[in-house]
Structure formats: C-alpha cells, structure tokens
Amino acid sequence: MYDTIIKNGRIYDGTGSEPYEADLALKDGHIVRIAPELDGEAEQIISAEGEAVTPGFIDTHGHSDIISWAMENYDYKIRQGVTTEVMGSCGLSAAPCREKHKKLLDEYIDTIKCGQEFEWRWGNFSEYLNFLDQQTFPNNLVPLIGHGTIRISRMGFADASPDEKQLADMKEILERSLTAGAFGLSAGLVYPPGAYSGIDELAALNEVVSEGAGIFSIHMRNEGSQLLEAIEEVIEIVQRTDVTALISHLKSMGRPNWGESPRAIEMIKKAREDGLSIWADQYPYTANSTFLNALIPPEEMNRGLSELLTRLRDDDYARNLIERLETEDESDWENFLASADGWENILVLSLPQTPEWNGCRIDEIAEKTERSPGQVFIDLMIKNKGRGLVVAFTLSEDDVKSIMKASFQMFGSDGLPGESGGHPRIYGTFPRVYDRYAGGKKPLDITEAVRKMTGLPAQVLGLEDRGELKEGMRADINILDLSRFRDRATYQEPLKAPAGVKYVLLGGDIVVKDDEVIKKDCGRLLRK
Image (tube, rainbow, N blue to C red; front, top):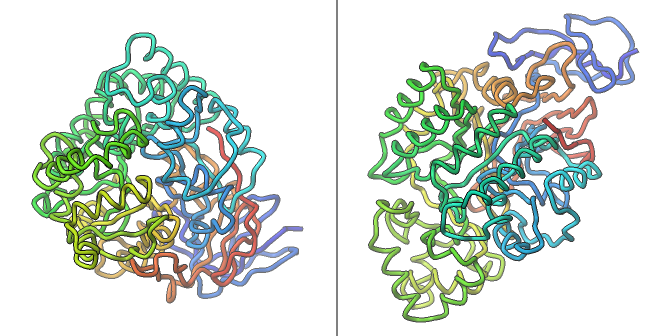
C-alpha cells in the first residue's frame, strides 16, 4: 500500500525533457513508482488533473540562517514551492562564533537576523549544525559557511591580509566545517570584512573547498563598472583551485553598464569551454536590494559597525562621508549610490526604528524633512543602528533576459525579509520566473525554466536525491495550477504570497494546500 498517489498530473521531471501524463506513487518520503494509470491502494489520493507536477524548487541563494527557526511567521520560501534553500550566502553565516569576536559577529549578521533575538548556543560550525539538527523548518536547508564569518573569528574586521598563522587557522576552520556537513564556502566581496581579502587568500581557502568537493558561492567584488574584472577574479580562483564556483545574483548594475551582460556571459562560457566549473544564479527583477550600511565605503567599517555609528555623529566626518558617496565613482569600491545614479533612485524597503519612511525614496524623505538627502541617510543610519534594507532600480530588462537564457544560469531569490518589509523577491521569485519569463515567446520554455529551478541546482549542489521526478528520489513535489501560478508581491506589498500553488509536498507530506501553509515542521537540515 502506498502512502500517496498523485493522479493524472502533467509531469515536468526537472531534466528539461518534454512533459508527459502520469501518476506518481509515494512511500516513506520517496517516489517509488511513476506510470500512467497506476493501480494499487493508497492512504490518500491527490488529483492533479490539469495541473503541472514538478520537483520542489531549489533556491540557490538565501539568508535564512536565523529566521528559519527563530521567526514564527517564516514561510516565504515554501509558499512559492521552494522545498530546499541554500543559506549562509554572501559570506554571512551564523558560525563559527568565537567569544572574543562575538559582538563583531553579532553586528555583522544583524541584518539577516531580521530583528530576531536568540541565545548563541554554539561555537564552531559543527555545533551550529548540531543545533539545527534539533530544529524543524518549513523547508529543507543547505548550509554554506561564510568567509566573512570565518575571517571575523580570527581577524575581527581588520583591513589587512591574514598572516601565515591566521590563514592556517582559517583553512582549518573551513576544513572542519566541510567535514561537519557544509556544502561549501560563500563570500561577499563588497561587504567588510570580505572586501578586505585578496585573491591569494581566497584561492588558499578554495583549495580546501575543492578538496572537499564543495562549492564556492561568491558575491563578486563588483557588479557594475568593473563587472568583467570581477568575473576575471572568479575565473582565476577556479583556475588555481579547480573549485566549482557559483556566481551570486549575476547582473550588470548601473545604467552606464547596461548591455554588458553579453560580454560577461561570453567570458563565463569561454571559461567553461576551457573546462572550468563556473555557474551563476539570478533573481528575476530589475531592482536590486542591499543592506542600508552597504552604501558605506568598506574601509570605513574596518573597526566594526558600532565604531562607525559613533563616528557618524561627528558632523565633519559625516559631511566628508556624504561628499565621498555623492562624488566618487566605482573605481575603488562598489558605490551603490553611484550605480543607482542618485538618491532619488534609492527606495527604502525596511527600517526597524523608522518604519514611517518605508516605501519612500531618500529624496522624498529629504523634501519632507527639509534636509539634504545625504543628511537623511546619515540620520537613518544612526537611528536604525545601520540596519535596514534599501532597493534601487539599477538593472535593465534586456540584461535580465540575456543572463536568464545562459546555459549555466539558475535561480536564487536572495530573499530576506526586513523587520517591516522587504524586496518582493522574498515571496515572488519562483512564480515570477514562470509567469513573466517562461513559455511562448518568453526567454525560457517551461521545461527549461523548471530544470533551472530544480534539476540543475541539484546537480551543482550535489543533491543526488532531489531535483528530479524519478523513482527513488525524495518526494519533494509541487503541484501547480499554471493558469494561476504567478507572483503577487510588489514593492508596496512585498509580503504578499503567490497564487496558483495547489500542493507542495515535502518528503511526501503535504505542507501547502491551495496557497496556504498547513505544516511548517517537515523541513530538515541537509548535510553534504
């Protein structure tokens, strides 16, 4: 007797093959049989007549290290059909946590805490994973260890290269974390302290990742005027180490850089033709989002966020900083303001202490408060203690489509709820891919879109029992009404859930039914 039979669905199996009509039988959390008109008894029958049946989606870029277990209303991924999410991206992970630098680490990961307070019950990465083993989640989690977090544990926020002992310690931490179950290393090279690292440091660490068959997920040093140089750095790291690299949220940011995506794609294609394993993920939006404090030049953060906030209260320091933000280009650092082409193009998404300004542009706040935009930014930094999320419409639709069609591309939401809002990609990424970019004359056909959300990321991450609908695979399954499957989240209402999700099954258990979450405890930590 089967646990569940899914009847008469249109199967998109995650391989890119043409869809077909069949039934699926599930038993003990696995797919045990796929065939037309299956016979046999089951405890429950699910009708998928007229619906698309796909593998559960895999989000290759997430920040749910804390909120997945500490936030009561965490359901952002499972509601859109994401059954497995990578966490620890952009160099930010919750471990290792060394007592000496705990305050700095707490400041460093503050934004991904989303206002959640918790007790640090771990020190090293293995202890953190052991803690997560005791928790349940709405979806499965794939852990990466953050380069920035490792660096803080040995160097704090020092704007310097590690000495021989520090580098040896970092490599040992990384090796032990990979052995404990991390799927790889992530780096955020625009965020201090990752911004202070050089290519020799990154190559040395990725030799360890390569030996452990892990991946290197990298938020590159620049995504705007020096995009191609940043890709060259990734290529060199892979050449030197033979690591598998996953470029985070590939884009060409800033109006002067629109149209650069074909050159970026050709660089990556050439490297792949030369035998290098380089991939990229992307979110399907023309607006990018970042932390409020990411507008600050990296060298100003070299003593941590608390010290920066103290200096911002000095009028002369604040005035000089504003001048830098408003006049410097991206030649030395990724100036988010320059990419946005002015304060009028930066929209506040979520500010924990001043939520009255959520949804307003910086120049609008300046006009209403009769101050300059720069003064508004400094004030928001101080009042919100550097926390918050902002967005800028810095990408072109043509570049988004160009990158989406690349054979090495897959999807990562980079979704993170602020304490009072966020980017609509939190809830909208995967249904938006289908609704806006798949089928007909759109960039992707439906089978390829499904593969890029399921089978391809499973292959790159090494998730051998997920990502495809085949006998023996885990029963992580979506049943979708494609006539209704779409994103509904907007910049004004970013927490609006998608429509058209008939069922989501996680390990064979129904966790979403008719767009509503009915179980939130079926997800587990996955280890490499």
